[in-house]
Figure 1 (cartoon, rainbow, N blue to C red):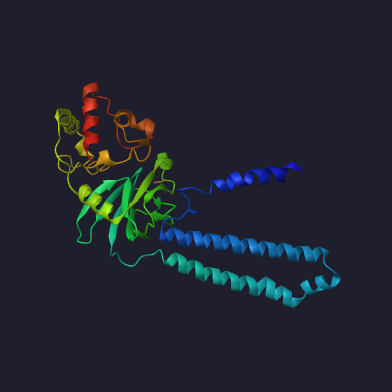
Figure 2: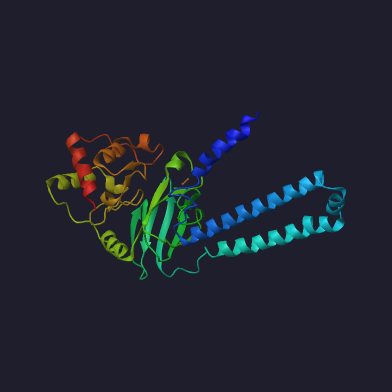
Length: 327
Ligand code: CUA
């Protein structure tokens, strides 16, 4: 039995190591996340101090001199320590917590607006400019550093939850309702997000990346991303585009600038510029695209895309080459 505290002491640093790192609420990189981390540290510190105080009182109640013990048993001690102190502390914390979290609830949108719809099991993303023009994307969100971005969140099917720990708190995405979140990234980087509400099947694979860029980088990215794709640049890409359109991919997927205008699945307009295939499941390579097209159910079980195993090797290579060229 003696070794148990030693084991706990040895394992504690390991457990705490899980709280650190890039994509952690303890490493905030945005204003909303900073407020949450401050609130968490205050609660940890305050809770720790109160625990020490209670243990001290307990020790004096058991081992103290008769005089100390009679002081502790006095009506005044019980009323002040047992009623007044908790009431004042908890009321103070409630006001502080509501104030801090209230700051995360934005007034009507003014700056950059990004609409995110939770789908099983991916993220439909729509960038809306101040003049109301919009374009679609999926699974990767780009934001400018230092500028507040309003996220308008909803769901197409079941309840999902939008959570990017380094940037802010989680907000549920509820069918038929629009919830809001305002995030400001403090420094450039890529921040991992995760659906935080069990939504069935491959919920754990419903991840996303928020990429924070400097203002200039964001503006040039936005201009590029809002534009339709250029036509195929060579024979292989032309062949790949024909395979894409003839196989009916456009019934579910859109590629702006071509006849493909489906809205059931993710918009693929600038797919080749994204980092991953199947929502963060695999890195973006021709090999992984081919795997997802032929056998997506093994990579993301339950996803709504049927397996396409009808392509010859040559057609497959042309198709993945074309998809990677969509940049
Ligand atoms: Cu979407 Cu869990």
